[in-house]
Amino acid sequence: MHLEPSPRQRELIEIGRRLARERFAPRADRHDREASFPFDDYADLHREGLLGLCVPERYGGLGAGFETYCLVAEQLAQGNASTALTFNMHCLTMMMMGPIADDMAMSPAARERHEVLRAAKFREVVEDGVFYGQPHSEPVEQGETDTSLGVGGRRFGTTARKVEGGYVVNGRKFFVSLADSAPYYATPAIRLGDEPWIERTLYLKIPKDAPGVSFPGDWDPMGMRGTVSRDMVIQDVFVPDDAEVLPPGLFGALFNSFPHLFISFSATFLGLMQAAFDGAVDYLTGRMPGAPALHTEIAAKGHAVAEMLFRLETTRAIYYRAISEAQVDAPPEAVQRARVAHVAVQRAVVAVTQEAIRVCGGRALLKRYPLERYARDARAAALMRPWTEELATQQAWQTALGLDRQPTATSGE
Image 1 (cartoon, rainbow, N blue to C red):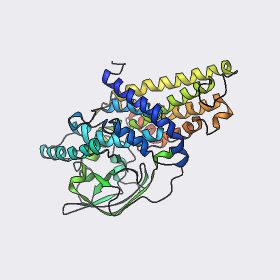
Image 2 (cartoon, one colour):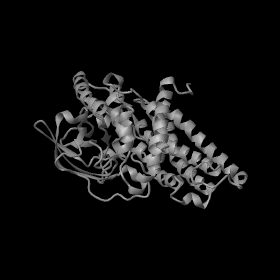
Image 3 (cartoon, helix red, strand yellow):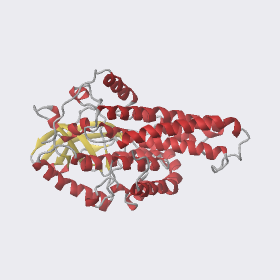
Image 4 (cartoon, rainbow, N blue to C red):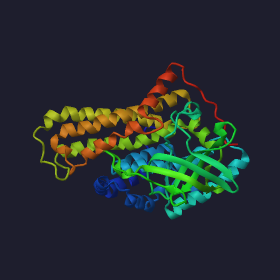
């Protein structure tokens, strides 16, 4: 068991830590108050090469795998959790298109075509600084894919009609992070037809300025305000064949084969827990700008600080174990640990961020300090689909009792 980051991981972790502290954190309050997208953070990500963090090295990227991505994202979240959460959408697209797709079964023809298409997409990311949103959530009634997709809760309300040279796509997405901010959106859709549903799953690159794309509605949430997650309407949008992010049929198969994909969200909330703990310590010791001098009650509050530390490090331990086991077709016990880790983070981040405010006292509720923002952002953890706390918990007990369905996923051959 390797319990220490590799030299390369340490190097990338340090880049993330430096960006979070020196660049993201000083701007986070403004983006939170304005509910504005942090374009300046993304400019820094591009400048440091991190938009290509999960792009394979042969395409000019940094070649980070799933585990390394999570370690870096944990650092970025300590500067601005909203930035880290939207960065997750981009990096998942890069990983799905790159190393995860490489481990999936594909016909030689499909793999050869995918290689050509993804090379062009990776080049745009590395050279031009483009990034991707992931509009997955859809307000549709329950259908076959809700039970057939092993991760649960994934729906296909967006349809794609095959036409000459591409597809005509229609659908409506909600909670689309990076709404009207990302150049492209990696969009799940299901092709109209009579074949088995999994063979008709598509993953398409849709430009934000494509005719028929709009982002209606307001954005004024309690937390994660810098994600700018409005609705996305896709009305008769033509998408060319070369906009396929994954070969036809591979999207559904990948979701079933790599459920660890969704614990990547937890890296953001683990980093948020660390920021809350560090913030509470800095406040109590007078190191936080604007905080009172050294607290006279610090001895009385020391026990609560220790309990926060115990919760943080216990949660980090199970999460690190889980991300180290991520792979295509992971064994059932590894998937169960992923669910445990995911729910542990969802619960702990709320407890630790709330405790940070309680320990520091009433002034910690003031917006001049970041502690109240941490507590608001933490509330989003249990709501992230497809592994919300309810869905992950249900799958955990169903698997433990042998009541889970084992879907059979074919690849995009």
